[in-house]
Each structure stands twice: as C-alpha cells, then as structure tokens.
Image (tube, rainbow over all chains, first blue to last red; front, side, top):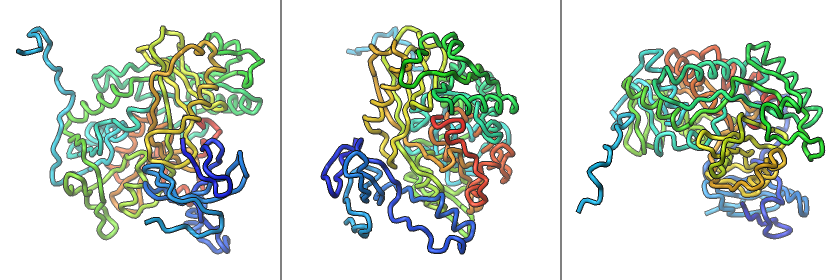
Length: 92
Length: 408
C-alpha cells in the first residue's frame, strides 16, 4: 500500500485517495478541428510508462482536493507531489 | 558419502527442449506465456510455420500465466466477444486430447451473481444474448443458485443479497501450469524454439517494416514479430513507436490452505469484486479487482485484498475460519473498452496481441489459434478482426465493461 503525501494534509494511507490517471492531459482547444486519429489519441490513449509517470490523485477521504504526483511505476516510489496547475517537476 | 539412496527414481524427462537463440527466424514471438506458446503451437500445427522462436524474459509461463485464477467461460455479452471466447471454449473441450497432455480441465460451471435489479436485468439480457450466439446460459433464481453451490449465502438480509445468477454449465477451470507445459511441449515437438531469460530490449524497424528484435542475448532477425507481452505490451510496442491504448495495473489473487471439497463450481460477483473456485488440490482460489493506480510492480495494495475478503465472507460465511495461505499479484494491461487488441499494427510485419486485462487465460487456445492465423496470413482471422487497434479511431468499440464482465 502506498503512503502518499497530500500537498495539503501530509502523508496519508493510499486508501484515502482516489486515482485520476495521467496528469497534464489538456482538453483540445478546438475538438471539432481534430482528425479522428487525433481525437482517438486524446480520448483513449494515455502514457503507460514503466518508470516515471506524472499522475493525478484526489484526497477523497481527506481534503477532497486534486493534486499531482510523479511516481515510478516500476518501483512505486513517489518522487514528488505538487499542486494542480503547477508544472511537472524535473526529477534527476 | 552419497546422501541419496540408490532407490530414488530418475529425474523425469524434460517436457521441452531449451533452445539457444538462432540468428534469424521466420517468426519471433515476444512473450512466453500462455498466449505466446499457444500462438507458436498453432503456427506450427495449423500453418506449417515451424521456424519460430518464443522469447521469454523470465522463465516460461512465469508471468500472468502463473498468476491467474484459471477461470474459463464464454458467456460474454457482445457477438464479437462471444465469438472468440466460445471458439476458445470449444478448443478447451478437445485440448487435452489435442496436446496429449492432462490439463485438469473441469467443466464445473460458472455462476455470475446478480445483487441488484440492474444486475438482474443485465444478467437476463446477457443470458438471452448468449443463447442467440450458441453459448450455453441459464438464469437461476437464488434457490437454484443454492442448489448449484450450497455454500453461497442467499439470505435477503446481507448487504449485497443474491437476487439470482447466470449459469454457464460448460464453463470451468483448468490447471494453468499444465496448460502452459502442454502447449510448450507440443510446440517444441513441432520444432519451435523456446528461449527463456531472453528479454527483448528493442525492435528493429526499417522503412516501416520490422526486421528483427534486440535482446539481452543478442540481436535476432525476424521476418515477422508477434507481440504477446501482456502487462509489458506498452513497453515492447514502444520500441517500435507504436502507442497502445493500455494502462498496466496490478491484479491480485490468493489461495487458502487446502480444504475438503466444499465448492463445486466457480462463483463470480462483479458487484462485490470477487471470484472464487476450489482447485483440485483443495485450495480456495480467489481473485480480486485491479489496483486503480498504474504499476508494473507484481504486488498490489493490501486494502484491495481486505475488501475482497470482506466480500467473499459475505457470500460464503463458511469461509470465516479459512486461512490465507498465499497472495500474489500480476501486471495486467487494460484497454478502455475492456476488450483485447489483436491484429496488425502500423508497422508492417509487426503484430500485437494485448489488452486482455484481467481475463486472458480463458482465451488461451482461441487467441493462439486466431493470432497464429493473423501472423501467418497477414490478415486478421474473422474472430479477431473486430479487436483491431483502429477500432479506437473508428469508434467501433466492443464495450465489455459492466455489460458482461468487469471482473473477467
């Protein structure tokens, strides 16, 4: 089970959180202008790396706020947590 | 002094040849699990293509093939799913004879429980759809459920009361290791090279065509490359720049200690996310839902197991004093419509079989058959044509989420 550091509440048990998948996926500016391939890419395709992954979490049983984390999907180590709207931190 | 008495029997013969990789093959299959082995077998048997290597990064069938809960059924809602899963079930019914190997294939039936009015309506709809597709299916009342599986709690006073169930009598279980070994032995006998501890680290693509694979045991040229890498499909396809609509998640299962035979069938409940059968040896085998977060770690979160046990106890109060013997996890590749991706890729001569999520074991012979056809002819088999990668662009999804099987 993961120990996730909510940016507002501090480290809490994974069971308190709701997962939101890949972070920083922007809604297309003009969906009608997209080709079918581009729309499919936006709708159905998400990164699935074995390694660092920027993802969204919601502290559903706590402050109920969304935030982002950078986690290594090969080890489950969480390298950074940051508030929604902030840029993805560079992990070295 | 020799500590071994002379009377010990000889070590049993090996079931298959362990091969050294050659410089080139007609077909390289990436992934030595059930699907890869079945594909190799049918390539050789049905299509006469025997210059085939199956590359496995670990040991043969040590990934999800060693970790699944062995449930076999074909009672899916949509025509496309019923087509490929029923094809698989028909192959299962003759597979021990075909492979000449015991698989402990036991058609003990599967109950899919309904716990709400919505469940009941969807279940009855699915029974009707199954019958139209020639798949055996019945709707059972709670009392009939109790007749099939006497240990199920059907009291209306529990949190998720059993309002009935669908029943597929031809469904069942098989011994997953024996299935892998049976396919491996039969494929090796036909000339297929099974190469373990050989991880694919790259795909060579020239002018839009795959020409070989790079591995931890050197480069191997190939006329065709067929991916069957389950949870690692995104990683492997990524070597060729082919994005797949997959998310990899841990999926957990567990067994109890050995018990007297108490559970005569397979019980699945999507609403409470647990599926239970009893292995021939006597362990209760239970599967849970996936961890929600992506991960390639072959272990899941404890609270998933806890929730699954709570659900199992509600359905089977008799399990209250059973002990968990062992829990484990595998990495499953889940698609947006809970249906697999089997077929061609934008890269010529590169084929993909992935996205089986939590339910690939039951399809093993069926997908091996169809995928072998796809690889051998360069055209999708009619039964896997609906599961093309481009369905996500055309919008022609095969949405099995919720409709038939959240848990496979």
